Length: 319
Length: 280
Image (cartoon, rainbow over all chains, first blue to last red; front, side):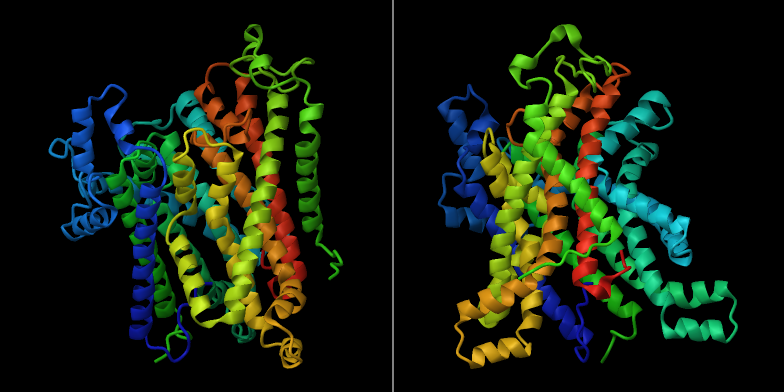
C-alpha cells in the first residue's frame, strides 16, 4: 500500500518531498538512459544510414545527431531540448521530420484511449465479481471468482490477444482488427488489456471488502438494523474501495506508459511501440525523449494516487 | 534454519504445478520425440493435426509441436532459475545492507530503487537486450537481473528495519557481534520467509517477461522458447484449423507455470505472514 503520509505531516510538505524525489528519479532515469545509450557498442549511424551510405552522408547524420561533440556537450544539448520543449530532433533530416515532442504528442492519444478503455472494462468486470466473491465468501461463487482471477493474471497476453483477433475479427467479423482506426477498433485491444487488469482488481476488491466486512462499524450498522444493502453500499463498500482505487490508479499509470504487447499485436501506435521502434533502430533522440515522458507520467500518477488516497481517507489526512 | 512446510491446499497445488515444470525442463529434451532446429524440418508434414506420430501436431515447417514445447520448457527453466537466483542474492544483500546501516547508504540505495521503479521494467529489459545483435541467454539474464533485484531489496529492507528493533539483535550487538555476523546469523535467516514468497512470485514474473521479449522478437537466440512459438503462431493462426493447437499450447504452458508460481507464493505468504491469511 503506497501510503505516502505519516501522521502529522502536512500535505504541503508531503507533496514537496514526493515531487523532489520524483524529479530526482526522472533525472536519474534520463542520465541512466543517456549513459547507457552512449556506452554500449552499436553505431546509430549504421542503422540510420543503411549499408551503402557514403562518408559524407554518414558525417551529415553524425553532425545532425550531435555525435561529433563530446559526451558532456551532448548531454547539455539534450537538456536544452527539454527546456525548449522539442525534446530533440529526428535525424537524418531534421526539417523533413517532426520533433520528438511532436511525435510523442501524435501517438499519445492512442495510448491514452487504450488505457481508458482497458481500465473501464476492468472496473466494470472487477467490482461486481470481487464484491460477489466477498459477500458469498467460501461459496462456489467465491471459488469461481478466485479461480477465474488467478487464471486471468497468469494468462499471457501474447496468447490471448492474437486469439481475440482470431475469434472476433477473423472468424466472427464483429470488430475491426489490427491496423484499423476508429472507436470500434479500440474494443479488442481494450478487452485484451482490461481482462488482465480485471483479475488483479477483482482480487483486491474481494480481499479489501472481506477485511472491511469484519470491522466493528459494519457490525454496529448491522446491529442497529440497517438493511444489508445499506450496510454494504453505504458503509462497507466506500471504505473497501480505497485500496482498490490505489491499485487501479497505479495500473492506469503503467498503462499510460504503453501496453507494448497489445500495441504490437494490434499494430497500434503508442508510447510503448514508439519506444520499442526507437530502441531497435537506435534513434537516440526519440529513445531519450520517450523515456523522459514515460518516467514523468509514471512519477506523476504515483504522486496523484497517493494524494487521492489521502484526500479520500480522513484517517490519513492529518494536519 | 528449518522450514516446516505447512502449506494451504492451494499452495500445494502450486508446488505440484511448478514441479511438473521443473520435471519437463530437466528431462524434456530427452523425452522429446523429435529433435528441434534445422534437422527437424519436414516440409511434407506442415500444419498437421495431432496424430500418433505428432501428438500435438506440427508447425509451418513441419516440426513437432510437443518437442518444441519441451525444449521451450528447458530454456524457460534455465533462464528463470538463474535470474531468480542472481537477482534475489543481489537484492537481499542490498536490502539488508540498506536496512541495517541506514543513513547515507540507505538513502543512496533507495534512490537507485526509485529510479528503477520510475519506469516500466520490461522497457528497460528490451533496451538492454536490443543493443546486442544476437542476444544469447547470458545477455537475457543480465537484462532481467538489471531491475529484477529491486523487489527483493525492498522486501529485505522492510524486514531488516523491523528485525533491527528485536531484542535478540540488540543483544547480539551488545555482546560485540560484528555487522557481518549480525547480518548472516540474525537478519538473513529471519527474512528468508518473505524472500521465498518474493522468489515464488518472481519466478512467474520472469517466465512472463521472457516470453514477452521473445514474442516481440528480442528474445534469446536459442532453438525454441514459448514466447517465440507464440510469435510464430500468430503469423499463421488462420491458415489451417489444426494450427490453433500450436497457438494455444505454449500459452497454456506459460499460464500453468505462472499460476503455479502465484499459488505457491500465496501459500507461502499465508505461512510466513499470518496477518495476510485469507486476503488472496
